[in-house]
Each structure stands twice: as C-alpha cells, then as structure tokens.
Image (tube, rainbow, N blue to C red; front, side):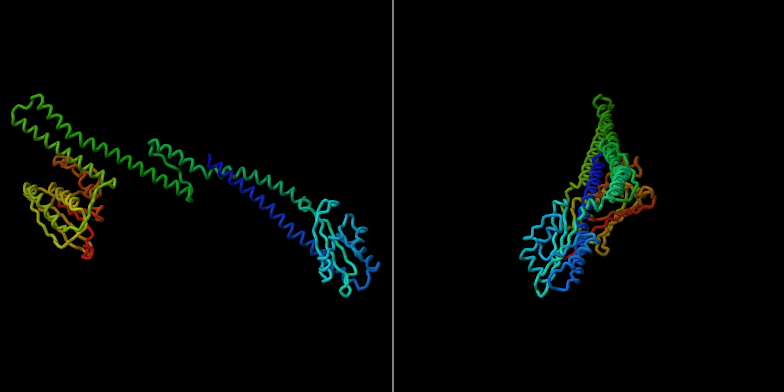
Length: 465
C-alpha cells in the first residue's frame, strides 16, 4: 500500500505542478500577447493621428479631430499643448513632473513615443499610456496622449474559467477512477511478490508470482519466479542430500553396531569368527571415514573454500606414480594397465588434487572392469590442451545414466558400488577439482563394452614455465 500512496502522491504533485505551470504560462501570455498587443495598437494609433499635424501651434480644430476619434475608439486619446491641460481630460491625477521629465522630454524631442504602464487607484487596475510628440523644427508644440485601462487576467478568462473549472473537476474524477485501477494494476505484481517473498522466507519455496506484462515489473516477477524455483530446487537437493547421507551412514553404522554387540555379548563362537567380526567392523569404519572425508571435500569444493596451490608440474610423472599405487588392485582382478604418456607435457595445477582426480577415475575403471579386462591410460597434446584419457573394457554406463554420473551420490549400480566400498561422491569431487584447474571432464561409454574418461587441461607454454 505504501507504493500505491507514493504513486498517488506523484500524480497529485504532477497535477499541482501542471496547474502551477499553466498559471505561470497564462501570466506570461498575458504580458506577451495582451499587454504588448494593446501597447502596439496605441503606438500605431498615436502615430497615425500625429500624421494629421501640419506644424505650428496646436489648433482647436486639430484637438477636435482627436476628440472626434476619441469618441469612436475603444481607448482614450487627447491632443494638448501642455501636459497640465490633461487635468481637464483624464479622470485621474497626473504627476506632470514624472509624466514628462527631462529623460522623457529628450526622448520626445527625438520624435520617439514614450510608453508607460502603471497602477491607477481610480480604476483599481493598471493602465497603459502612450505619449506621441508633435514637433516643428525640433520644437515640441504639443503631445497626443493615449491611454486605456488594462483588463485583469481574471476578466479576460472569466468565460474560460467556468469551462476550465468544470474540466478540472471532470479530470479529477477521471484521474480518481483511472488512477485507482492503474495503481492497483501497477502494484498488484509487487504485492504478490511481497506475499510470495514472505512465504519463501517462511520456507514455502513453491510460492510464485503471476507475470502479466513484459515491462520492468513483469521482468522482475519472472526473475523472482526463477529465483524461487532455484531456491526450491536447491532445497530439494539439500533434502535429498541429507537423506542420502543419512542412508549411506546408516548401513556401516548398523554393521558396526551389530557386530560390536555380538562381540560384547560373546556371540562369536570362536576366535576366527571374532576376527571376522572385527575385520567387518574395521572395513565399515574405513568406509565411513572415506565417506566423511569425501563429504568434507565436496562441501569445501562447492563452497569455494577448497585449497588449491597451483604450480607447473610434469603431469605424466603424477599419472605414472598414481598408476603404480593402484596396480596391485588391478593385478588382484587380473586387469592389465598400459600407459602411453607424453613426458614433455607441463600443466599448472595442485599435484595432490590432480592425483586425487587420477585415483578416482582409475579406481572406478578397475572397480567396474571384470577380471581379465584391460585399461589404457594415455596423456597427449592437442593444440593448446593436455588430454588425459583413461579407457577400460568394463561394464560401461547406460546412456540414460551418463549425464548424471557426476551428481552427488549418483550410482549406476547402487548395490555393486556399496559392496565395493564406493561413496558415490568420487566423480562429483573430480568434476569440481577439474573445474578449479580451468579444465573439462568428458565421459563416453557404451554399455557392456567399456568407458573412456577424458580430462582436458590447458597447457603451460615455455614462456610461462
């Protein structure tokens, strides 16, 4: 409602300014058009009457002709020999000393008329006067004195004022009706946004605003809806994330709790069974530890708090050392790993984090490749890029799952992954680390035939080393 009041106040102020402007304009037009036109008419008339003067003293005949014209004209005109004679002609007092002072006399001797506008109490209004000189050989023989009381602007617009007042009332009524609808139309989306924002702040992320127009307010409404949708999706992801974390932790916790109680209650029939139980507890504890560590890494990555220390490194050496660490796990499944690495490739990155990338990708390749399979690790240049390729002959990834494998806790085969000890966070962490290195992850797979994971990093040139 505050905005509606501001809009109404704006309309009201605009109306007041318009009226003030119209009032000022009317007085300007009064001065420029009416007063100047009267002044011009008096000058023209005075000069025309002065043309009948033939020189010499002002005769009664000449004064009579001026009087005759005076009776026909809408303004007063007199011909006098001396300004003091005006006392018998005009119905108001004349200050003769200021009427034709030294300055005015000098102007008249130059055959230039004298104009003046002043207030006269007798008429209770301004009058405009014009004095036209009657000269004979640079001698002032007399003057023609013309004057007319000026009408007030209210008198000039008396008829118009009635129509203007009626129009103003009609305008206010229209403004009231149209303005009310207009302000409601303008403020309705904002009111909706206010209500929706309150709902969102209270946790209802389904609140939306109707965007009826495509102007700034309509675009704001659409932007609000996009924001609310994003918050809703993030909230859903958060709920799903918490539910998944709870589910992932519940399984190892239940194993640890169950086997611990079995040992505590003496349910292990022999020392070998007890060792088996302890082995399961240790395995599930390590799994929990790995899950918590991956979660912490992912939270740091997504929050921008992940520590990355970049410096030029020979990437082939990092890859080779990582392959050596995982080779025993591959040999246990009789999987052969072959390497084709370009040792001249230098990239800028954090060696520990890049090793983490290689470990996660290679570990997945070993995990999802059956016994007797093969894994090919390659590192080569392509223009200004270094490309790491890890291709396996494993079970592959179905097409519908390929775009989702980097999502948190996403598993193609959940039962198999849990049995092998995976957390479902590895590729998500890998994707984030690669992006921190200005790189790109690409996964190509054919179900039951194998998978190739490619990682693209910018090369370090010789000038940068």
